[in-house]
Structure formats: C-alpha cells, structure tokens
Picture 1 (cartoon, protein in one colour):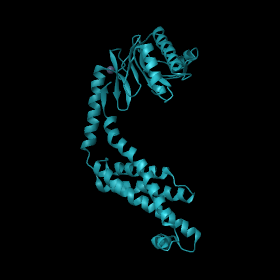
Picture 2 (cartoon, protein in one colour):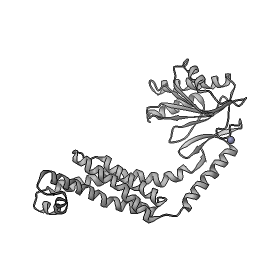
Picture 3 (cartoon, protein in one colour):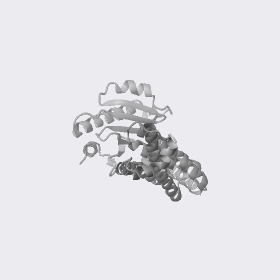
Picture 4 (cartoon, rainbow, N blue to C red):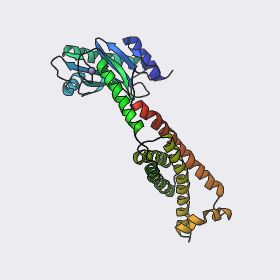
Length: 311
Ligand SMILES: [Zn+2]
C-alpha cells in the first residue's frame, strides 16, 4: 500500500468521509459542510476544499482566514476565491501523523466557518442548497442539483460543438509541420551541445500534435496518424541535419554537401553507422515517449474535460 493510500485510509477512519477508489480523494458531508480533500503530493499532503458563504451573502475573506489559521500549526496555507476555500495541511511524520494533522486542520476550519456564520453553499450559484461533490473535467466541484444538471449540459454542448467542428486537414498538416520544426531545431541545437535528449523528442511530439489541432481545428484519429507520419520524417531530418552540421564543422565539406553525402560517408566508414543508427533509434524512442502521453491526453482529455459526473 502506498503512503498516500495509508494517509487516505487514516483520514477516512477518523472522519467517516467517503473515499474515491484509485484517487485517494475523500469527500462528503462533515459537520454540516459539503467538502472534499484532495492529495496534492504522493507523500500524502492533502488540501481541503469547501464552498461557504455567510448568511448575509458575504464570501469568505482570505485575509481574515489567513490571520485565523496562524493559530493552527496543522495548516500551512489557505486560499479563497469567491465561495471556494482551499486549505493546505502540513504533511509531517508517518501516515497516522499526517492524517491526524489533516483532521485537526479540518476541524479547525469547520469550527471557524461555523463560529463566523459561514454556511455550506453551492459554488456555482452560491445558494445554501443541498450540494454534493461532483467530478467536473479533471477536477471536483461542490454543486447543487440544478447547477450540476446545468454543468452536465454545458459540457455536452461543448463536446457536441467540438465534434461538429469541421476538420481542416490541410491546415492540420501545415500546423503539424510547423510544430515539428520546433522539435527539429531542438534536436539540432541540443545535438550540437552534445546531448541526445528526451526533451527534443517530447517537444517534437507535443508541438506537432498541438500544431495539427490549432490549424486543423481539431485532433482526430486521422490527424494523429498524419502527425505521427510527419514526426517520423522530421525526427529523421533533424537527426541528419545534426550530423551534417557536425561534419561541416569538423571538415572542409559545406553543410549541404555533408547532408547529401551522409550515406556515402557511412558506406566509406567515415561515420560509424552503428552510432548513427543508435542515435536515431534513441531519437525515435524519445519522440514516442512524448507522443504517447500527448495522444492519450488529446483523445481522452478532450472528452474528460467536457464531462461532469457524480462521484
Ligand atoms: Zn447551485
């Protein structure tokens, strides 16, 4: 069991909050407040989120909160935006200690809210209606039933608008090409500095895919395949330019001759073809490292960003 999971379980035992499987997010009603606690480091540091407003309609004052939490060493930071209050807890000691501090901080905030007349409200409409913690995109929100239904509809409308948007393949190809040039420039630049870096491969993949989406209107499966094809060519090109620059710097050949004659140099064993192939293989591996998460997030992320659901 990971340390984070241990902390999550220990907080759950102490508070009776619900726990979302897989994410260690704790949520539910606590002392009359709808709230959730999200881990923000793997070591078990937690942030508390709640949405409160005073009965006279006044949102929480961050300066008052900051002054108040000085008295509680379990709390390291507090932020407020409209009705949403975010509180960071000190992640000190073993999982039991961390959970204890988090619960101490939680109790401190809930008591402070209660004593100062703040009640739990929906963070969209600000009304003190029964609210629940829901997933919106990659984040969580505290919403009343009406606002949750509106948020679901808004997400569906955004997704439908994206799906209906025509794909401009020519624009996409230009975009992917322009994006990949940034990757080529980095391959050559870093190559000349003596690095074969994963950075250039990752940048190549991200920029090519983003370029396609930007000028093509959206990134479809077709767009992904085209972008990958462009990346394959451009990685090869970047690597070959890098070699040509190196040869031009170390010999009497000009850059263009060196670029053109590279296969001949290898035949003549002036360049170790094993080193060349190894170098190129590494560049392809790095580009794949960058491309796979970019593609996954492009495919899943767009849908997830437009999805609102119950926990
Ligand atoms: Zn609402």
